[in-house]
Length: 427
Image (cartoon, rainbow, N blue to C red):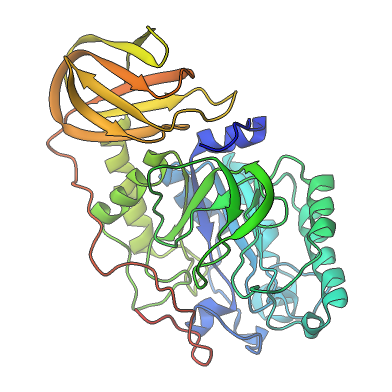
């Protein structure tokens, strides 16, 4: 593993939270596309029953610690009444041009005690200034400042790398704005990132999940990663939509519980974060089918994890712990939590019982959830390749009523960008 670096208090808090919700909403919602080119009229933005509280209530039903809103997607349309362009909600019929989606979602988050974050696409297909790097840096800096100063404390600032291949932005300038006004916000994947993209839009991490990196993958549509000048501590966030599309489409439908559980176990359960997209529909509400699927997912998560049994962990020789349960238990899942205050150190670990392997795997991180064939245990041994600390070992009883996680064949996110004419993604 690379050099051992320590997380900041804000990074560690974000990692422990584990679960957030994305809201993709904008002109694309009303045009029925994934990407638009900046020429759609603001006149089509007119949700008839906009309800930010309903959005955040659904996020709370899931158990999300924070939400991220697409304040500006690649089309350049701004969901707040920015002073930088007339391509915004101020030019739409919604709320007679006096609405502010960002403000309403931020207020709903405060009412529910959920963190609020914003997505501000660097790529802007509407702004004429985009053709002039200096002019666009000034415009983008002004937009960023409005968002950093107008909506309270932010949990996360999300920079999407799509469309920006080869473009040089004034990241030092942008980062000064974020660090001045939102020093505790997580910065996603660009500029001076404190968290990074997992590298796919399927919501899936893979073992090992390393928190220290010297390269960043920028988007789904190019191979390879951009090298950094030094190693940084930047744990991954897995982003995925509850549907195939990031924006709502009437002919789309939510993923199955088996699919969503597989995503959860291969993101949160692998020690990464999960950002699950819930796209509001043209009425301005989360689709009833998606809201119901969220409640079903929460119920399944509760069946799996609502009755944790915290084991006694006794440290033995370096890299070895004896784990004792309060009684003999038929175990179906084992959760390990690494003590990360001094950095991530475990790159390989094993769980054994009387010399027999139950689990042999790589990293542990903030949490590692192993789903195992049910086995009756009163104790077991945990071994790791480093003598670092283990914060907790938690077991869960086997439960035959649980949904079997399953990743459907052929459901991977497209690595081809949306069609430049239709704005749609080929499946």
